[in-house]
Length: 290
Ligand code: GUN
Image (tube, rainbow, N blue to C red; front, side, top):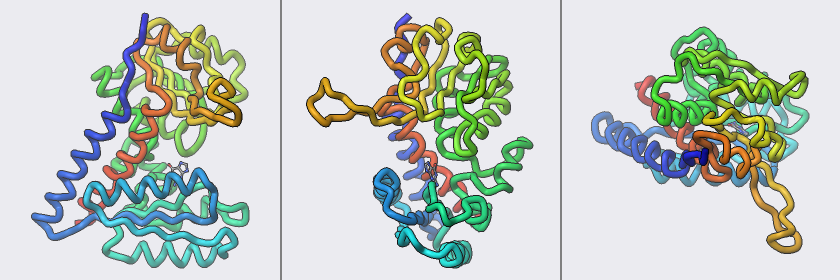
């Protein structure tokens, strides 16, 4: 079987278009412009790229973008004071604090200082609890993007066997909750899983979110399964010339594409959907607030 390629880039463009329409209506009918504040502490190059891209797309859909760049040795108390200001700013409907934070900061404390209604990442403990109990919440952007692609491809996911590889708070755990909400039978696999190949071979849906380049080979994939690759890993690519690199996922694309029924590419799969969902969450936060 040769897999259908799930085009996350095109899907994300459609989501952004929809968000843009929603933003225009909020402006026209209520005189409100949704606003997203992004806070970056330090100068991690990958984080800088993400933040720039988020800001650009926020403006493109007609929303206001507020970027706050803080020095790497900013005191935690100063970051908390900024979050308090943003919580109380009526022009700000969504707040995102880019992770990871510098080592001297307590990430849980910082995230839980964000007003849960403005927590467009869905990382606040209240939103985590709401999602875990099937209540209306802010849903983390990457798993939400994965779910949208799965639903678009399959329609109902009810009764399917899903494996999520990776147990992070950002992707693995919320992804598992979302799939459970769709009535999948969900396995969460991780670095201590005894026979990962065997677990993956039983799955109709494989979501790989471990951050290890090409760790899932095609011969683990059940014929016709759907593979959602969350990994974005930069590896050396000497075949492209000296010092060159390329991006790969957590799945070995060519061999997985031979077995899968559908697969997301890297780049151009999950990545673009994450930002589109962030914009969608910001509009949702704004609508709920007004
Ligand atoms: N760092 C990597 N992914 C994310 C994300 O989805 N949200 C935030 N805030 N930081 C991240």
